[in-house]
Length: 455
Image 1 (spheres, rainbow, N blue to C red):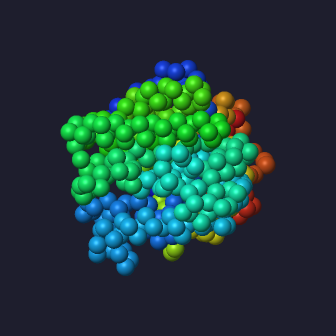
Image 2 (image 1 turned 90 degrees about the vertical axis):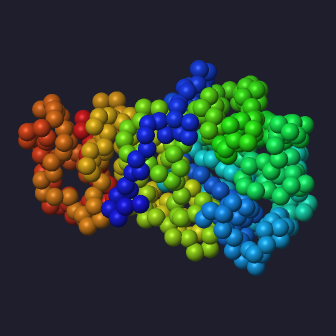
Image 3 (image 1 turned 90 degrees about the horizontal axis):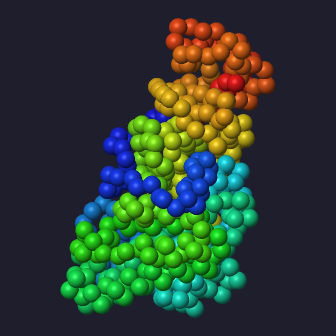
């Protein structure tokens, strides 16, 4: 992240791993996808037993020697004991302060309109009441199972639906707890299956069936679902023969969930929108896309999280919307079932900006030149919104602001969102020059983004 505004990472269009986007043909999916594009701002939540250790979600179980998989704590020196201790976290997971309505209220106030929750990450621990394994939050081995809200996935979905959110289920294809993915007969070497699926096809088929069954459970027992967000794109035929064809299951569950948006990362025919992770394209992209980004440094809960400022988050959202994308912002709940207080503070600060400027975000379309220097451009019907993303030291608007618009009818009204009266303006070459009264400059000082409205 840049000091003043988010510095976009250059990504060649398109932005998914297989360098291709295949638009869905299902009319209901296309219709829902268009609705999703208008929402602009969503909440991602990574939550599981790993929150008790405050470690990066699942990845310390991966035996690869990379920064992401570094282990810490008393079991760090022995992978086998680490895995045993990690899986034993099931027996102590008891998030007694779990209150999804509190999350939904805070997210809604901040302008978020859809959410995606991690029903199962790569570690295989299920945050829903699956019948395929006992490694789940509703198991009698898990203390929270006696709580009437133990099936947290169902509770979260219900709470957010009541606030009119689109609801999404994150699901991991790899499952490092399943004996059909990491067979105990062999030690795992990396994130992939630890045996050759072509050599042991029956075992691999059991894993495929296990996966299909869990997806069906989520898509048939948890009410209306809008998004199925399938992670673990490396589990595919081109990687160690790990062929797993989820398409028939998707076709099947779409009978229960008409118009279901599917994001199977790494599988273009099932990737209904693109998902650049922790970075932002440096240009407008016509295909539907979403940047998934952490509010802090980590996807999962860590005790001493360092959150991005609300200024940075708001500027990030404006930047993404101007390039035709959505922002899915992640907050990791803690082991007690609540967020850090700072996360609520950030959402509250975003809410204050949204209350005044939200109309420039929602239901808008990006218009050329999309992003130019510190300017971002969007349109709703005949109303233009031109946002100025100031540098960190810019506390007030100048007395005369030059907006890069080459043509504007003389009858147009120019206002600043949050200010009732129109502003004086005149043409100046290929731009317009807007006069900002001193009182307006004082009243709007310190804003993370100033938005000019032109009718």
